[in-house]
Image 1 (tube, rainbow, N blue to C red):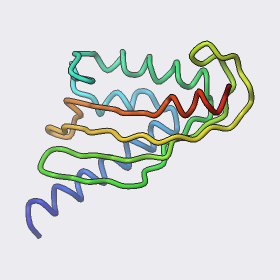
Image 2 (image 1 turned 90 degrees about the vertical axis):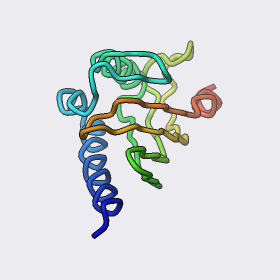
Image 3 (image 1 turned 180 degrees about the horizontal axis):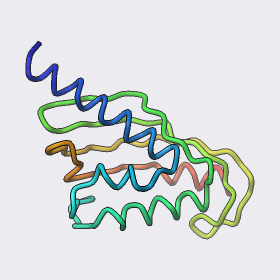
Image 4 (image 1 turned 180 degrees about the vertical axis):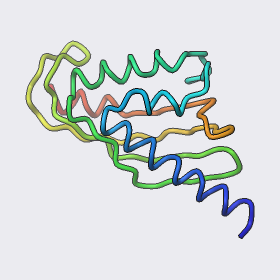
Length: 134
């Protein structure tokens, strides 16, 4: 087995555990995947900052779920395309809860070093979410 294949399998396994912890709201496990500090969109943040942002999202969409649709691994970088979905149960970007189900697309690039996310570049189509709750 080549190093690239081994690395890809390791990253897939790592990410499966991570996304399961996100969908289960297991914040301690989620935090264990982030380096400290971690660069998010080229801004240094602590793992607790990322968790706090996730909690805000979950206040608006308590059943928010990430579903991996595609993953590309190259060296120590991993790109993941998701289907994100949830039910609008709390204020989001100025819109009060509507009870509407929403769905959108996300693509996130991760830099993984020693099993930790050291850099994250998330691109989430929240404009589509807003269109669905207007």
